[in-house]
Image 1 (cartoon, rainbow, N blue to C red):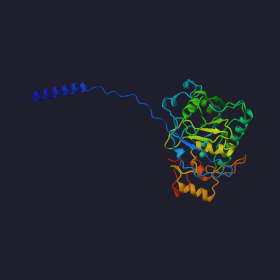
Image 2 (tube, protein in one colour):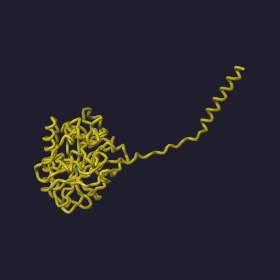
Image 3 (cartoon, rainbow, N blue to C red):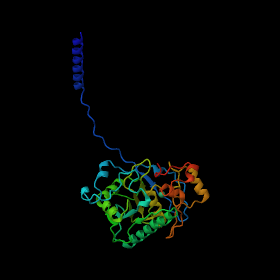
Image 4 (cartoon, rainbow, N blue to C red):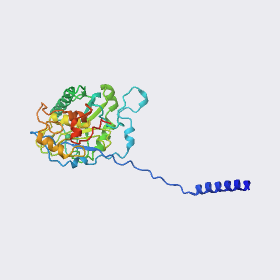
Length: 336
Ligand SMILES: [Zn+2]
């Protein structure tokens, strides 16, 4: 009886194995990594009187970028294709959670890229290029000086002239002067293919790197400078600023460039409501005449806006800001 039972079990096991073999092979389709949705923090804050509001914020929620091949982020960045040749080389933290600009106190390279596109062309206007580099330098230095108020050292490395390894030129075939941000993948790929990111980080001893694309737009251009940066909902490994150098009859001032740089480190616009900033706080900024640089910027070389405690909180210079709880603002990407 016992022997028969064992035989029965063995027979049953055989049948089960056979059945398993009969299960048709499941074809697992190769899947595409979904498009990366990138926060498009669009700047519309430049105004002579420095008060801009009323934007419904919808633009800030646009999904931009089309990084369909995540393997790009694992590519050797820049010209170095042999990662093993220098074990001490600085690895860009592009796989990190905060993009290419993480801790503002770790040193930041700003690469300036003078870009032609379908509708704009620098035409060798070196004088205006130098003017924009000068504005960028003023904006970056202002952040360094402002960070000292929070006992922090925020150092920036940027070109002080056109003959610099931090200056590039490129021509894009498509129209890049627009708000929708769908050109992000083109710009990202250019950065990965053409800029020696790793070499620059090593040379300057910095850990952050951001990219300012300058377009020689005319005064009647209506597309304002804006930044594509990491946010809590959107992975973004390359953080870049699109500087449309002239817009709304203005030339982009240093304050706007400082504002855009701060976006790269997590600062939110305060002049329109968004998932991060409720309308009530926007109204508060209007009523109180806020001078926060994420709410208002000024023309001229001297930046009169302020890097407030709230902006400092969002870029990771301080750990707390009472306004966040008081107004139910989003937590800083640097917290938790
Ligand atoms: Zn902005």
